[in-house]
Length: 537
Figure (tube, rainbow, N blue to C red):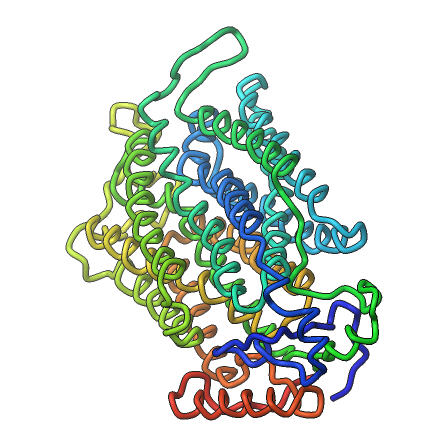
């Protein structure tokens, strides 16, 4: 059970107690002098930096999601030969860069002892990628798709800032504020993903080809998104450079950081290793969540154009409107977590499980079952006299016999199932993982969580794009349904391991041990977290 711990695994436990999490609310049985020196009154959450971190998360994710509904349509407008498979590669490469650089940025931040420089580098990479997106039309047609690929590769480094900011919310907050602090950064991230297409919807009124300012620069419904993203890059740089203030009130890096080290050492408790299996299950959940999300971002636009016979302009308009409606629902869910005590009343594990069932329901109801009455509209692209809308039957053999999903059923279930499931997973996953790990530095663990999300984003487009091109939407719905079913089974099997870190009695004071026992008994009576297992090494 014993292990050699890093200095970041040490924690000063203030005098005030937490009612919910024993590992986050313990009291040291030390002298009164120690309690006076390191009481929670002297260690306060830096809310200004927490709010700023949430704002940076929001604008950073807006720059990702604002391109979702228009990127494929932009590619098809510039080069009609571009396939869904190549678009899947573009989306996957964006996620590949996030997956690689999330842990690397965390390691770099630990090495240099600050977050500002890595955050500024991430923002600069997004800026360069957005500039490349604006100038795509400068290149020959045969080069355009490759320039877009390069643009998203460079911009993909930017989202590595998310894991840094989430970890920052855990170290810049005292124990009693940690749930709310992590909820703010998670809120900013999820709202940015959800509301990004809303900004794209506003730009659809510009149309295409839009306004040509000169020979080199044109503003249309596609390039306006990148210009907006560039403006947010400038704003983020300004906020990080002049207003971001680093704080570490939630941890103690070294006992020697205080003049009277003996008093500090008497207040420090060594935390036991957290359950590695619990971390693995949380990472698997993040992988599944983003794998499902790639369905909407990779083939969502193409699927709607094919299924409902929409043009490029129509699909951008309607998809953006649908995203906006879902964003409002997401905003409502997050407001309940931040401005009410919903997070303290619900069971985080059951909430994640319920969200998985919602995702399963979406795939069952929106599956193009053979017994549906209507079929998709088909057209032959070689016959120029036909309206070029619907399913391209001369290229896609699976168009024959494909039934049409009811448009209202499809978008209502996207609104309800996706709009409720995703914000609930985001709002409960980070606090759940934070409690599993305990009150220690979590930069590496949060980086691993985002790396698994990036892995889902990378593999998903490659698999889903090829499946869609070769076999149509039905195998994709089946594939994702199986993935969700496996995740539900894993979550149920490991359900009792997803609990707050249990601190052994010999490492904490007697009074704290009694508080911890009282908390465990309360969990058993209310079935809040179940029976506590032995910690895994």
